[in-house]
Length: 295
Image (tube, rainbow, N blue to C red; front, top):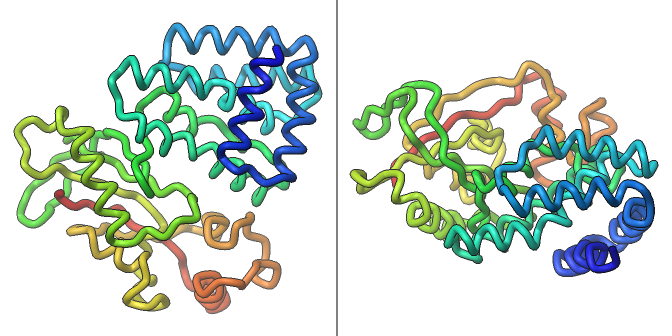
């Protein structure tokens, strides 16, 4: 029992979790590991050792049971479960022959979700399991400032004269909240790593399609941000952008770091927050885009 608890404590230290988060989660660990919920936690650990294809719904249901037994917030149970699975995830990487560099980049996701959960709910935990679960099921991989996974395109795209069809394979780009600048050098380093990692899925292609669906590709960023900004530079990576608008401002939690209420209550500390505040004050739409490029 103490060994399992130490795994989580050491992980939080290695990932430099905020001191307040460590204190809160240590209390949660004591309640979970010293009670009846421990047997449930051991079971999911054992199942994951036997089969890495873990299901998000299974983790969610397990976290719910642990929460009911221990009295710990389910969001904290979510992250406690995944932190305990990290050593086994590393073994699965080794067994698959995957680069451990990707493993170390991937597990940073847990701190991102921790901070996101606290920003949105005031709880040091994980708001849900479906995104993080893709990392533990080894379908999404961290590589530098991005995360990547194989997907099938859901529509046709024409990219620099190359026709991509609905159903074609592509590499999907996710942008985790690592707090690191997505500079040109950092982005292209990540693209190169992803191309090398997924090249066996594109045996006949010199260049492979990369796809992204994100608010960071919002068309008005070219108007409200400096041309030299990393966000605008990222938009320039794409050969094709298909723009869309959001029906409301719910997605702006990504900019303001909290669920949207009124513009008066939203922080305006950064240039991006100030720019979005002006957009909302004018009653304009926010949005994003789908982007594709060949690399």
